[in-house]
Figure 1 (spheres, rainbow, N blue to C red):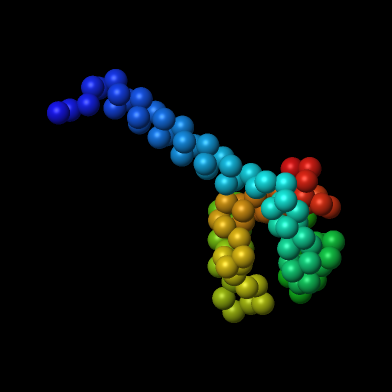
Figure 2 (cartoon, rainbow, N blue to C red):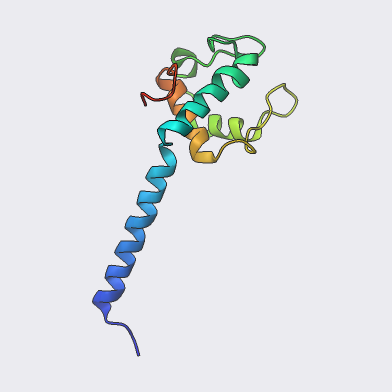
Length: 117
């Protein structure tokens, strides 16, 4: 017996809404995770990119130095590193949506504590 067409449409719409809500939640970490990510960037990334993210062994991670760079390429660099350089991959420590949050937040000006964004 086939389900009524309206029921199928409702199920598809609910499934799509659920997936969209999950994706939105994953793209914007909760405040506690934001603090963890900011701490990771400030301490771990800062050891090469400078504690103020203005450069060191690695390049500066400031809005004006990241302007115009493709987000997806920077996310790939965060996740997989750069072979032949000191840049390691961080996929063991954060998800791709979290890496995108970090990149977009760096592009907008990185917060001191991670709560404000």
